[in-house]
Structures are given as C-alpha cells and as structure tokens.
Image (cartoon, rainbow, N blue to C red; front, side, top):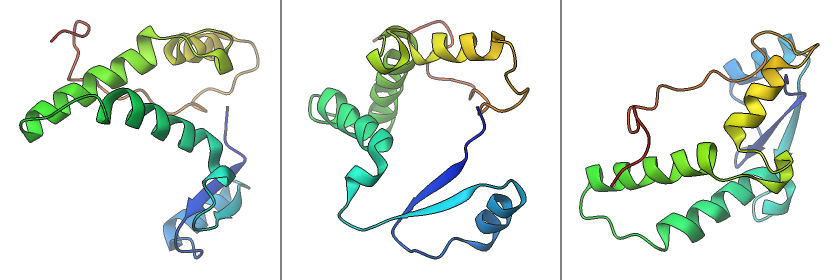
Length: 124
C-alpha cells in the first residue's frame, strides 16, 4: 500500500529531497509536534514494544552482542509473533497476503531487507 502521508518529528521543515519526493508522489507532509508522541501512534507502539521486550530485558556486552539481540527481537517481532492489528497475522504473513491480493500495486510495499542476522531462523 503506497503511503499517503509522511510523519516527521523534530524540525518542521522537510529536507529538500524528501519534500521533492512527497510532492512528486502526491504525499501530504504531517509535522509531529515535539512532546506529542500520540500524533505518531504506529511508531510509538513499535518503540514501546522494543523498549519493553528487548532493551529493558537484555544486557549487551558489546556492540556485536547488541546487534545480535536486536536482530533476534526483530525477527521474532516480524516473523513469529502475530499482531492483533494485522488480524492475528505476523507482519511477514500480512505482507505476503497484501502482495498476493488483487489490486495491490506492484512495488508499493517497502522492499524486505536481507536479514543477515538470521539466515536460517533465530538462535542464541
């Protein structure tokens, strides 16, 4: 699904490249006021889950250890755990369903990143 608006926190002036892209793609620009996280609920939800389930629970001994633990959490969040907001599907399942649905625009979804942390699933 192609986004119809961009939410930005901090500096109310969009960067030139971002503003040009938004204008060319008929995407509205929505500034998020400092101290108003409720204006961007989706991101705040992910940030809260990351903080509660990973950052507050894990101790990292090195940058590599932190990357590994964050990669495991990200894999679990996107591929293992269903989300009620997605009809109890994982984000990966919801993405596949959207890609296969009739009328979905080719290339409208963000491209999946190569997940080097888990080439064969999570492990500790």
